[in-house]
Figure 1: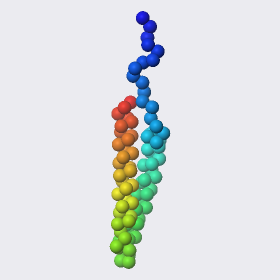
Figure 2 (figure 1 turned 90 degrees about the vertical axis):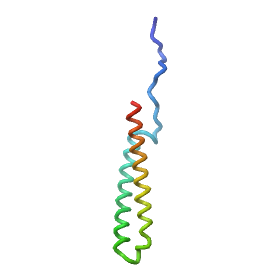
Figure 3 (figure 1 turned 135 degrees about the horizontal axis):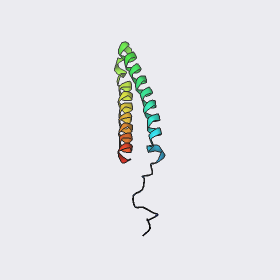
Figure 4 (figure 1 turned 45 degrees about the horizontal axis):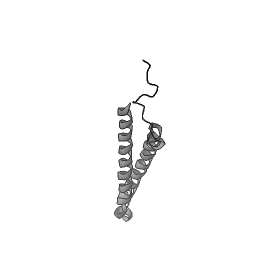
Amino acid sequence: MSLDPNPVFRKMIVAWYESEPTCYIVIVSMLLVLLFGVAGVSVAASDPAYSSYIWVPGLLILFAALIILSCIIQIMNLYSDK
């Protein structure tokens, strides 16, 4: 009896936008955006004229953190599938 050349269990093909290097690039980019948002919060908090606009860098921090979290979850899913 010979072995089946086409096995049923194959390695999953990952799309380029879900690959590990892309996730790391996005994480580094979003860390830079997060730092930019932190700088924006500190500037807006230090100047009373801009204190009402502190929500803009706050949203920037929130969205960057959510994207970082989603990329970390994606990387964890990639490692769990191996």
